[in-house]
Amino acid sequence: MRLVHVLIPIGRLEDVLDELDDEGIDYAVSEEIGRGEYEAQVSFPLPTSAVEPVLTRLRNVGLEEDGYTIVVTAETVVSKRFSETKKKYTDLSLSRAELVSRAEDMAPPLSTFVVMTIVSAVVATTGLLSNSAAVIIGAMIIAPVMGPAISASVGSVLYEPKLFRRGVGLQVLGVLLAIASGLVFSLLVKETLLVPPGFNPIEVPQVQERLTPNILSLVLAVGAGVAAVFSLTRGVSSVLVGAMIAVALVPPAATVGIGIAWDAPLAILEAGTLLLVNILAVNLVALSLLWVSGYRPVAEGDAGYARKRTIQLLGIITFALLVLGVVLSGVTLLSIADAQFKENLNDEIADVLSQQRYQNVQLVEVHIDVSPVQGLLFSEEPEVTILVDSPGGVPPSGLAEAIRTTIKEEQGYDVIVLIEAVDASRPADDEATMTERVTVPAGPVAS
Picture 1 (spheres, rainbow, N blue to C red):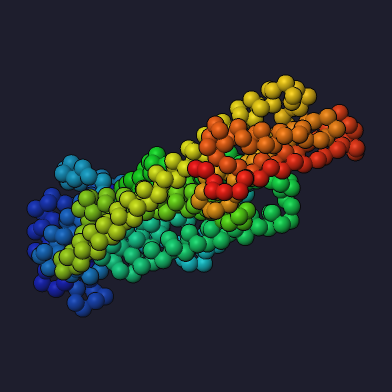
Picture 2: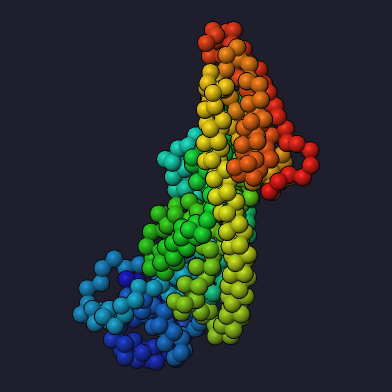
């Protein structure tokens, strides 16, 4: 419920009161003595969804479009006439003026936005590297990402250029800050050895979740956009919705920073694609729902400009999403191929080691330094490192070549095979380690 206070220009009081009586709205009139151009102040309670249509009717009979109007939340209204008015307005949407006000409030001051974005990105990076979902959720709660996305959409639909520019600018700044914060913190962790030597963040489950984007990833972004618009227009709490949008944006941005820090081009591509898709999807849904909900500029002369800008934005975002959808599908297929290679690799290594001549050799660990998919995308030589337990810590003769040949025959990939052997039967301080390396033969690499 809302309580509306308006100042009535001289000569318009009777017309305004007639409109309120026609609507069956209770009101109170008091004399206005502070400003010479107004003759009275009228206060009246309204259901939330009645504010916009009632103010529009009053403007049509002389209430100034940019005149003195205050709309505040009313806790309780005791009135028979108000109950009748409430039955006529079942929709819960906010008025245009309230929509703009809420959108402005949701986008925090620049200094607050910068600090909270950096903190949330650093915390999210910590959660990703430590594989802690709880820490990531904590980062999402403090991330100030909902306001800018909503501000840009409201600014476009209601033709509020300043609000639109601020929303877009904060979104761009937020993404860059989140990536940079994730990068700087990841480099700090890496260089100060806060993680074990040889630590590979790409293998952490929470990071991997952001490295397997697919079409289903759109569901989160679309749901976040829908929830954001309903949270805004229905005047309900935006804290949980903001956290939902942050889940779609901050962890992927932090993952891009992690990928840069650990020089993982495929991870950067996958997380970056997911990040862009989520940003565009949230904005597309917010724009579409606000427009479909009937929100238009207060000034009729601005309606055409707003319509043109909104259609242009919807077209640009849709086109970008289609392009990224193709990329997303390609990344999905490459990820499937990469996962399939890894899944088959252990079986092929086990088949080779099951041969009689390798009966004293035990597989310890398999590490894919560069997968065939990475090699294809980034012109790197595919490389697989295999650690085995072998008598004397000596790699069995021909094992690397046998494994390389099997991979080539079974999967069609030429890869570099590196065999590292240890002798677990020796004391730890006398453990022997030797290496055998078999490279890709000269000539074109098979695909």
